[in-house]
Length: 384
Image (tube, rainbow, N blue to C red; front, side, top):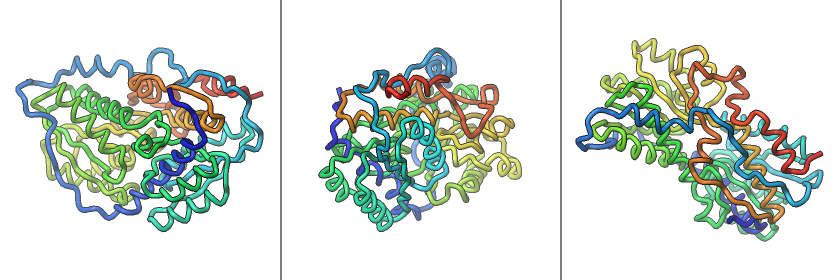
């Protein structure tokens, strides 16, 4: 059981919020990407496509899904409750901020965005601002707790909880476990590898594009390596680092250059789908036909998939994700106990393999895992 406590919530908020951006700020100028390692070296023969497809069944978007915490609050949320969102400045972060608007309106929250910045000084200043604001709760997506430990203590003293999303070390910092922590990331990394095997028809040469500044990226890689070694011990998978500073700018160029230098590569995986934005056009110009899959899909990725330009993505229902993080925060603020389901249930509830056959009609809304999720949350939150 996870007991929602103001103290732990506080620490969670502070720690989690700083991680992602701090890493971004401190390591954005990392060294050029280098190949590293392989998925396996055994005598297992060809890739087991049938096993890959069987493993992927929970991630095909079929069957009924439920909210991760499906119990009502003990009391309604007070109107005007002040919640701060830590904005790390990425395109996906902007989408998540927008996804908080509807539940905030439903509950009558005072929702405020604080831009964290991309260097240690900016992060420190932003978290000092959060402490001064003294909100009722904080939502942090991807920011590593290690970068704002002093503010964690201050928030703890004030009794201000923080709920985290895509933060890998909440437990280590005494924070509530995020629903999409390390095990969740490894599970979806395994999905990327299984999808690569299935969609390539059993290729043997792969590459994984890793974003070293994102703590979750190495966990996705770990899951992908383990699953690929299981499905195809003789397959190889190079690992190429792409600095976070290149996302939204030259990441696609780096992928093209890598594939040109390694023409035997048959399929690629990437930790974040921003790597693929604009990539299809550049691959065409370079005369390359290598396809790939990633996760953390942005609207342009959905547009590329619908147009038949991008092979696939591992969609994350970002609306459901943000409503779930807010739900956890509400329980932390209320000191109400809750329990997360098992890792596979958590992962397969929010993620799905998406290709041209099931691409969402609205690329901004993206994948919707539970069509009536708003009504379900409203009922659990005792909202009028």
